[in-house]
Amino acid sequence: MANEHSISNNPIFQNSGHSFSELFALLPKLQAKATANGDLNYSTDTNTLKAIYHHADDASVALLSGLQSLGVLLATAADNQDMGLSLGEVSAVGWLIRGIGDLLTSCTNTKDELSDELF
Image 1 (cartoon, rainbow, N blue to C red):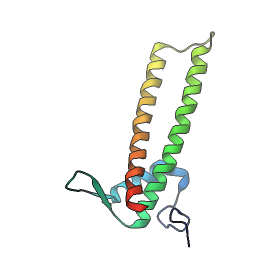
Image 2: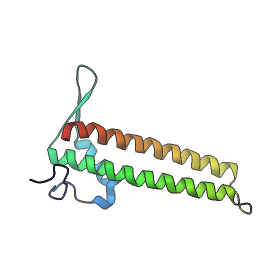
Image 3: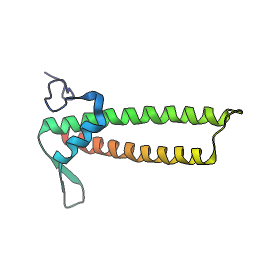
């Protein structure tokens, strides 16, 4: 029996190296309907649901890794006595991290909601 989480035979999951572009291309195919208690039910074919789930998971991993690296970079740059960061640069990096955090939250929520439908 194949692993229910397997994506290898999914014709929709074509390009794992481009999680963001694939995710955003597939999301319009997802039809969400609100239930009476306010939850969302998703409907589309199973291969598309699985592809969205896996692209959201891959995107989350990439975002988390990038955030961690930005943290190290920011801390290292701030500790550098010779070439510190300007207030504007710190602010810009802070807003970037905030935006990446918001995107990561959206990817995680999408993956979690689809997990309920798929697994």
